[in-house]
Length: 198
Image (cartoon, rainbow, N blue to C red; front, side, top):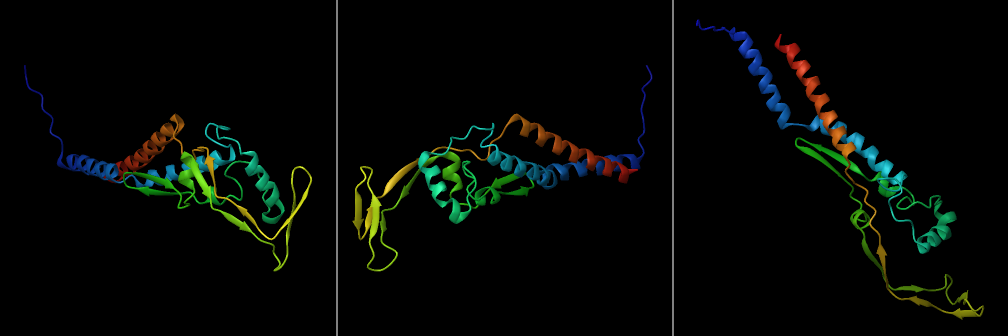
């Protein structure tokens, strides 16, 4: 049986090698698709806050004490939300993404985030309340209706439990979005390289 051979011109081999070299570079630096995915994921974090968890409504509701504090501060600080972790929006707006050649970092510099994300406890230190004016007195009513006057009130230190409210979560939808974003990037680059090779 005769042997069949094909001679590939050198310029075709060079074009293939150039294309393969391009793919090596692409696999080593995924910064561009990670930036694209990062924009999407910041939207996911924002939606998690608005919908009170992922899936929606999965965060623990606010305690009656927190609701009371917000009600008291409503006029002074213009607090309008009774949603968890959305007092004035500072935490939600502090999230950033950092695209890297091999991945993506999502996070916040806000020190409260890790405790709020995973749950835990927070201790309020002992507080001494004094009258605003020097020489003045404090006045409050006890539950039984009696009036109390004093020159200071000492609130002892107290520890509160903080329920977990995960702000960064991963779902199969995110897997699909990351896969689609990366595939689209590779296809764009392949088309550019194919155009250069011809």
